[in-house]
Length: 291
Image 1 (cartoon, rainbow, N blue to C red):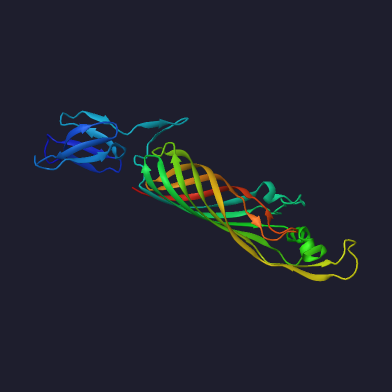
Image 2 (image 1 turned 180 degrees about the horizontal axis):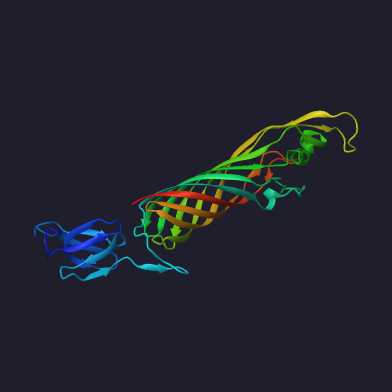
């Protein structure tokens, strides 16, 4: 039983009941005081947290709205999180020059990168409903054709028809910050996008192989090598995502983003040349939310 039959009752989306005297209501908030003491201070609550308001005469009004599915009706989740943390992983697909597997024309050469995987951790803080400031740390692993890479650098190594010994990969790291906008953050299924800028820590491993000393590919093979190359370049990440509510505070996510960085390789026949790291990343993840 409520403490006073003259009380208004606010039912929250988490099931909690607040017995009070409602002072005012609008689309965004409800102000109220305590039900027993007239001297209670005025408090506010966001309407996104409210499921229903019941008046002393017994009449009720539903505050939470509903969205229609093909055959069911799903209640809104209710709140917009103040903070969120997500962990995502998936496929990294190189595109453009970065994925090229042929010798290009100076000053742009192929990256010989192949499909790999990506892992990222993201955190965000709400600026306003639907809009968050986000930071993301990312690890990207792509294999690449090291033999072709050696041959691309033939004038540096003085080796022709070179073959790499062993397997090699690109292992890049990135950090980003920017804006994340969720079109309908209260819904069971929500859509959004992000624009992030930051830095890509670009890494080419040291490569060892064997090649010939002439373009006729005759004579004895000799050992050749290229040193590792590490550098940091500006980068941008543009993404779209779909999120599905599992339970309060937990969502599953499906994302697709495009990463671009005007990186340069430190080797090459004529010194540093443009590589333009670019890739599409498709990911699955889990998001934890704090309200």
